[in-house]
Amino acid sequence: MAPGPLCQNEPVTNDNPVIVAGGGIGGLSLALTCHQIGLPVVVLEAVSELRPLGVGINLQPNAVRELQALGLDDELTKIGVATKGWSLYSRHGGLIWNEPRGIEAGYRWPQYSVHRGELQMMLYRAAVDRLGREAIRTSSRVLSYANAHSDSGVGRRGSGIAVEVEDQAGGRSTLQGSVLIGADGIHSAVRAQMHPDEGEPLWSGHLMWRATTEAPPFLDGATMVLCGHDSTKLVAYPISKPDPETGNVTINWLAEQRFDLSAGYNKEDYSRQANVEDFIHIYDGWRFTWLEDLAALVNGAERIYEYPMVDRDPLPFWTDGAVTLMGDAAHVMYPVGSNGASQAVVDARELGRAFLEYGVGGEALEAYEAKMRPATSEMVLRNRNAGPDYIMQIVEDRCGGEFDDISEVMSHEELTDYAAGYKKTAGFAIAELNARPDLIPAGSRVALPHEAEQQETSSR
Ligand SMILES: Cc1cc2nc3c(=O)[nH]c(=O)nc-3n(C[C@H](O)[C@H](O)[C@H](O)COP(=O)(O)OP(=O)(O)OC[C@H]3O[C@@H](n4cnc5c(N)ncnc54)[C@H](O)[C@@H]3O)c2cc1C
Image (cartoon, rainbow, N blue to C red; front, side, top):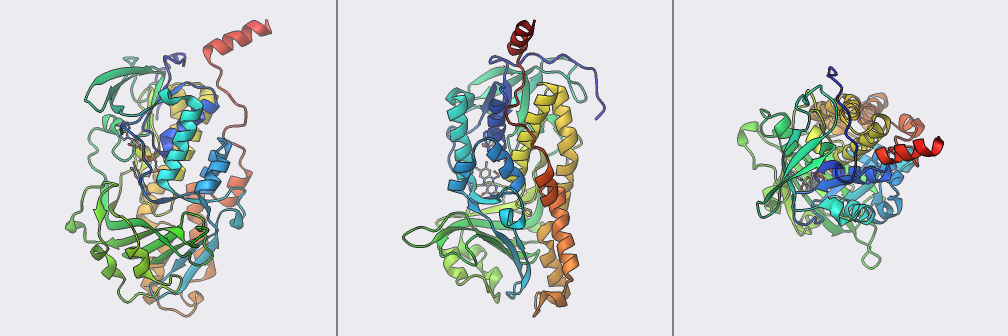
């Protein structure tokens, strides 16, 4: 983006905080990051009460590293399962690929499989604890923003923002801040104002049925399994440790089927419920060598949610004056690389790093965008065409998923190149991540105006 005229950053104060639209995984990670580096922050969350909604997600080592840097290691260990492996099977039960994950793979940080709602509640508790309840405002739906500088806009810098907020009763108010970060998810109001002609998310043709079931563990109890091919898939992984009495774990599972685009779909809604009969027939004739009883797994779910696989096209810009986007608001992607939540956490940390380097204003937002937009745009497109599990479709095409040994179908080199390529794009290539210095060195703080004055006086 071509830089425009430089406006002054207005001082960040309690009356002029960083404003975050959305108290999801990304928004709460950003609030904790701002607190860590000494910035006043207010999160505006639309719902009246945060509840542990959703099913399982994965936190890749690059995100776990950042959550540990926020001091959340113990809490994460309690709610997550340190994932040890990632295995791909054909619909005939043949093992296509098996790789270690997290610490087992050589990362300095684990990968965690967690319940999305528990992760959000963990971040929420930490944010309320550290920032106070007043900083995380529920029943506060962001409707629109106005840059304070009339010459602000795309390519302009500076800070100062007025955010229009609506409460549950429909009452409206305006909140002043230094910058606004749109972390308001797939239906972001901030993104919609910035890109008014964009329209609805784009459907891939796939429907997903997601749920959790208390069931006996499979394989080593810490492996994520993907089975099938691009048109029909089953994904399963544990998101809890074994119950000491029953030995059962909570298994997160996802059934996926591709339809003709003309079939149409129900608009994306994380709470839309579905029935086993809607999809169970898609597995007729399949063999699950890694799972004892598919029927028990799917029938054991208390609730099954139907969700269409949707994303949005990469954007030409994320930053408009003192406003930028992060997480799903910036780059919602197909959930094929287990990377959406991780990327939201990393965005939060990259924003914190930019505030440290440039101060709180448009310059920091542009620096953040310049780093994150190209890589995440590539990920959105890559997930569309060939996520890391696309190997399964190649195997299906070559042999209908039937083989005695995978080396008859694909060379080891082909398989490893494929897996390594995705990790590099997604920012969790092992050697690079292990060697990279911390995004936010411990103890770093943004000097606020009164602190800078004090420092100057004391050094005279
Ligand atoms: C209820 C819910 C359930 C989900 N379940 C799953 C799941 O099971 N599996 C999965 O892979 N992904 C799920 N997701 C999406 C997943 O959390 C994200 O893909 C990922 O974690 C990126 O996080 P994010 O913070 O960018 O977005 P999100 O986690 O979606 O958070 C966005 C937040 O913004 C709030 N919000 C929206 N509009 C406004 C507004 N105008 N003003 C203020 N606040 C606003 C939302 O209530 C939400 O809390 C779910 C999201 C939600 C909101």
